[in-house]
Length: 316
Image (cartoon, rainbow, N blue to C red; front, side):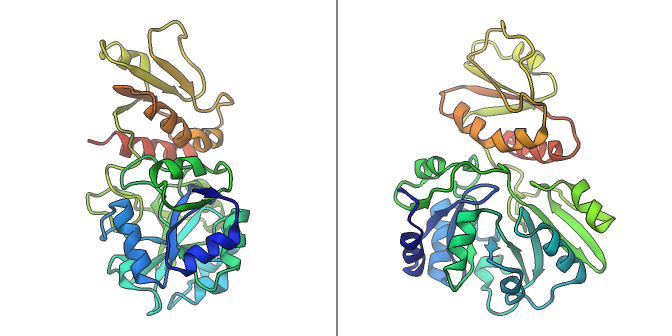
């Protein structure tokens, strides 16, 4: 149920219901962080393992500080530069944050979303929100209210239009004086390094992810997906199938026999590609294809983030 009625959404949250939350990254499935029953319902609704922690969305840096024991100097530096924005920071939680939210870990993931509807909502509530992506576990992330409604038609979704970043937030943690990259996201590692100099890269995927979005298989369509630098070579090996190709910036040969061709970024800009990624995968996933072939992006900037999402979507 799609709505633009923020007071209605506020009332749903106060009553312990789940709602669809627009952010600049993807839409979240949100609940009151302090309502354990509602938080449990997120895991049940998404069929998400309770070993996979949730990201807490707050309205301000002061609200973030109220949830943690320590706020390192470099966390303060990053917050002032990138919040509101698609940067999630892992910080030592205090007792106000339940172990259910953090999957029994002593750290909590926090960010301030950079979306006018989300910020308006958060500023009208007296509690933060937990909000993992509003999709069944391992499925394609939603970037429109319509995507959320297709997955969860019984919940109210606040319509904030199409997401501007289109991929999930970058996650960082802290080790001593070092900033540690834990998940590639909408802010590139190069951009963060421009702010804090050196950053350690610890982004390996695992079967039992201690961080949001780090499972080896994630963001997947219902059919098989292959990622390659040579889509035409791969196409030659998969005859007798309904195939869609998702190109980076241009279709290499338009006369080839393929059921559908889509292009992520005609401009060749990885920012445009990131914004369009999940919407394009939703489109292809609804076409009854047997196989989706996706052209891998150059491995720099947001290209690294997009390739990370595609590799997880392709993992068997």
